[in-house]
Length: 373
Image 1: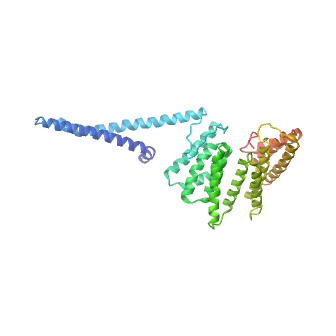
Image 2: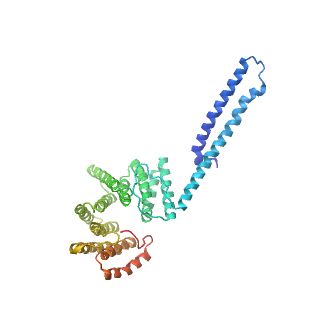
Image 3: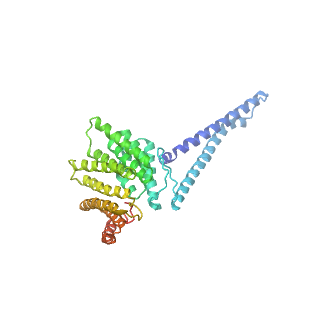
């Protein structure tokens, strides 16, 4: 019981004891000074009661002060926690951001208070482990298990905080695979989803630097590191699609070629990444034509030709996702296909896809028809 109390209130106990000790010591010194004054003025027989009081005062004052200060601090902590809980019920975000992360753009994240509460509790726990400094492997294991859950819940701000803690942990123990993944995913892609493009590119570039250092150092690169690097190029292609479409095409062609030359190219993991590249090829066309969101339409015959080109890519992505029974990503590709058809006014094509969308939506655990492609 005492051990549990000590672990929970250690900082409060130490600070309360320190303040009580200083105040008690000051009062004790003042009382001794008072007794010395009495002796100096010639009172020979100082009252036994006064002499006793110089020891009774610290014995009484110290615990009284300690209990008083401790109670105030604990009450303040409880009140703060209650206020935080109330903010969840009102669906207002009050969470602190990671110290090295700047999020300055408001976006429409998941507003489900239960999802936010889960994400915040999880990330708060990760940050507590980080402050302890001895739980680096636990942090990485927790990130590996739950990062995608936060992603499908669209808790991107919490993912950036998770990335900051995991990056620290991975750097301490020299886990290069996790370090590169985190720079690309939580700190790269999630910052892009939060409209922090410069921050996203900076972290992806950091992952590339780490990858090149390993490569130049003669280290044998694992499949996990290779796939993380290629994913970084894919993400960079989407991030830059609006400003530098031709460069984005080059990135995606390079990624696709590299994936197809891997010895493990037939593995499900690599097949997923190949399909993701085809999806990204369709996506950058949609971004370049400004038809990736809302109800914008493709302009002119050239625009329609590009849309049909994107549809061919997204069909290839869907075929692979369907073959490996990846329901969520299949739905993601079909929704992009629907948006492309919608942009050229193909109502019949859209109607034919509606049944597939309904079926996949019913099978999908996480994704709804409102997903952002």
